[in-house]
Amino acid sequence: MAAAQRSSSVVPDRSGVFRTATIVTDRAHRWSATDQQVTRSCRRTGHDARVTETRHLTVSIARPTDAVYGWVRDPANLPTWAAGLAAGIRRERGEWVADSPMGRVLVRFVPVNEYGVADHDVVLPDGTATANPLRVLADGAGSEVVFTLRRRAGMSDQEWAEDTAAVTADLQTLKRVLEAG
Image (tube, rainbow, N blue to C red; front, side):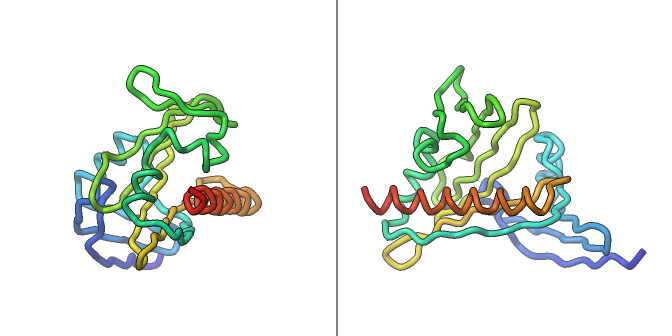
């Protein structure tokens, strides 16, 4: 096995707090491990710290950042632009619940913050949590929305392409909705 390579950088964690991250890479796996708190968080939530493939999908929106962020991070707006949750979302016992093609799912956003972080987990019917990193960034007088799409273990190339196309279409819908209103 080839020797592992290490690199470090400062990155925001899911709550927007900047931490030192160490990336360890070998030929077989790419591991991303931040400090012990984030590692414990990954174990607690069921997120896998191994990263296989990631795509950052973006859309520019001709609306002020605060307006875009406020709208995007409100779970009640998801059915308007996220096709997988188009059947609707509702509050049940203090949680956001949606009926999706995968069944009943929970949607959990990070708290409102000043950084434009609208990360949210979608908890599938089997309890598996899928992290959905979502950012709203200032771009002149407008905004750029960045969705980080991660390839799930076992996903075929066709499924990966379909997932990428679906999220890209969702972002274009978001752009149309926000620029129209």
